[in-house]
Amino acid sequence: MMLRIILLLLVVAVIVLLVPRLLSRSSAPAEGSAAPGFTLPSQEGSSVALNDYRGKWVVLYFYPKDETPGCTREAHNFQRDQAHYAQNNAVVLGVSVDSVDSHKKFCAKEGLNFKLLADTSGEVTKEYGSLTNMGVVKFAARHTFVIDPAGKIARVYTNVDPARHSDEVLAALDQLQKRPAPSQ
Image (cartoon, rainbow, N blue to C red; front, side, top):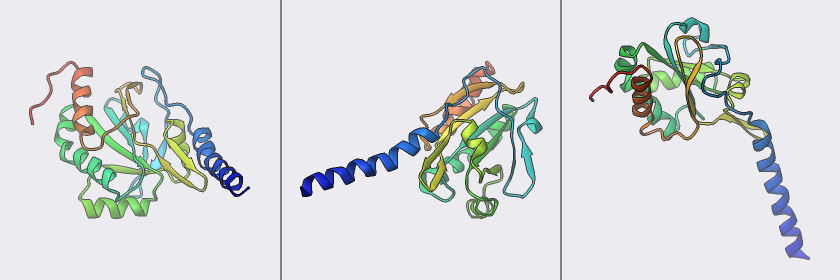
């Protein structure tokens, strides 16, 4: 009898934890499709719209949480490579469901000078198929979208290694723009 109760509780726990996660994630926009537009506040408090960057390449990366080890490493690598992104006519925009205040503290502590956008409602993150909902806790999955100057999605990354991702994105930008990769 006790074993049945334990098994029943285990099944209920799995359902409570996994079903919302599976149901909350919509599919990511496909390569070649129009990038979903958005306007979100940055760590500076100003509104940032995707349309502000028409004519530039946009590296739109979603990450789970400010000041966590993987997210900090990924942000540091994007920061380190800012000159390379500028050479590629590209900007980096980070998005999480953290608040503007959280982004502001994260940028100040880690010396980040590119824009981090606060999607506290999770709506933009959901449009990009990156929202993970674990009951009352929601966060962004680690996904990246390279958006071309015309606003089309040129590359999608849904399996991201934060330690090498910036290098991977720079190589993709070089390939997409048909230029040799920069030496580091």
